[in-house]
Image 1 (cartoon, rainbow, N blue to C red):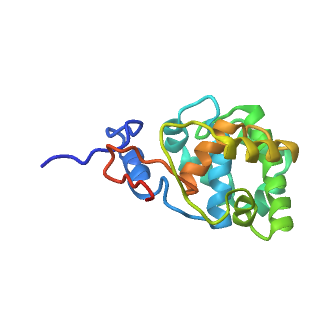
Image 2: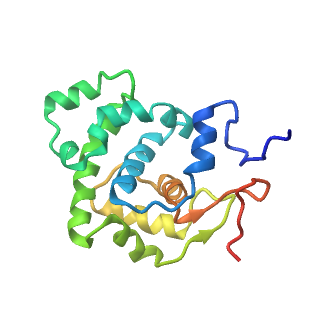
Length: 184
């Protein structure tokens, strides 16, 4: 039996990565809970591989109270100190501090727009963008600039582009991948 071809970035020796590629990456999920979780995880990816973050996803879910934004926005100094010692997650002090600050800004955006999906749609509209072989675009530049102007960190254009791919605003399965669609 021939194994299905996947995007070149997918490490087929890692079952978590294969499952993520096949069942989640690029599939639209615009619930605030998912958009929030993915933004926090993508911000931890900065300078690392997505596989590293994905392998620690369950530990992140535990450490970040199931990505319940209300809990995260109210993490005490003691809880934040414990995060910085948690060997299950990425213990980068700057990224952890940014994740708390970014959570508060995400919540402010929810209050302003009614949902994070509505915020993102103010840039994207109702379309799904079909493209591959990019790491950033004018769209990710614009969203990144806006989030940074609001005070977020670790949300550069490349991180935001990756985020938009992950949650389904940009569909980027490679032409050789069994999940490829051109959007035409």
